[in-house]
Image 1 (cartoon, rainbow, N blue to C red):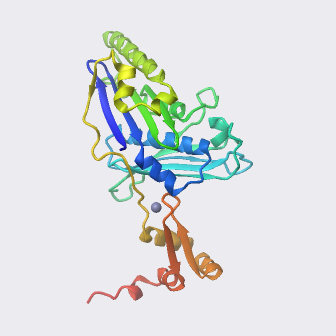
Image 2 (cartoon, rainbow, N blue to C red; image 1 turned 90 degrees about the horizontal axis):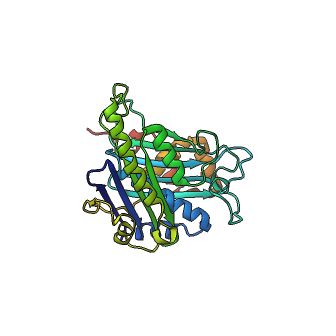
Image 3 (tube, protein in one colour; image 1 turned 90 degrees about the vertical axis):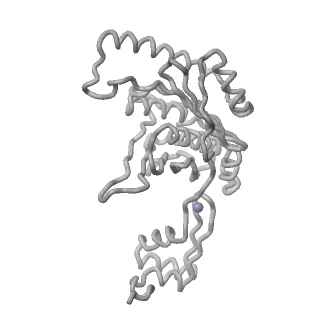
Length: 323
Ligand SMILES: [Zn+2]
């Protein structure tokens, strides 16, 4: 069973969450069995991270985490990796692999070999008021000195610090059976993160003490090994790391994280319409219809010649007008 548990450290300004995706992660791999191991593991890490990040914010809508390869001369094997998580923690994920792998690629060679890749986090509200756009944050794949970051966890830690001023520790691991992640975050202090919130000297001393708490817990968190993350239960991991810390746990997230694809025939129809009638007609001629496979779940949507022609009829000739 996939699970997500949140916890706090009592009396300390530090909170955390741990996610362990098992059946839901296996379902993603079952639907697309051809990922090379390195790609599978990276997509699993991204999925665990995206579920953790959505569980960490109050937001009614989808969180989309994506990495897009560069256009020209980019030899990264991964052209695109996308994870989408809804408010109820249902999620889907997919990656597009365009080059063969040697198996020994580093994180940046996998995804940013040409130094042109872009990574973004999008928050897409479920209900948009008129004219509202989704929020998109650009996530650098390099540190402030331009040195490539060497894991997806580092990329997100760097982003959280730069864009949200939030100290974050992330550990991520994935294999064929599961995707696991732990997120530890220093909670923002009152008055922090806004221009009027300059700290007084006593508050400043206070903050230094609180940073020490965060640093200690972050160091503990980083001490867990990949094999431990992928073999221990959530109880065992939390005990192994925080047995000597004042940890208080919440009930597991309900509903639990699970695989769910949001594709539908209607959405595919909309995409075909957006190609324009000329392009659609060309596709119909070539294959006697239009066949579209969902990149996320593999579902086949088939529009035969008549279905496809209907897509471009004026609405009034398809639906009888109301009298
Ligand atoms: Zn789908």
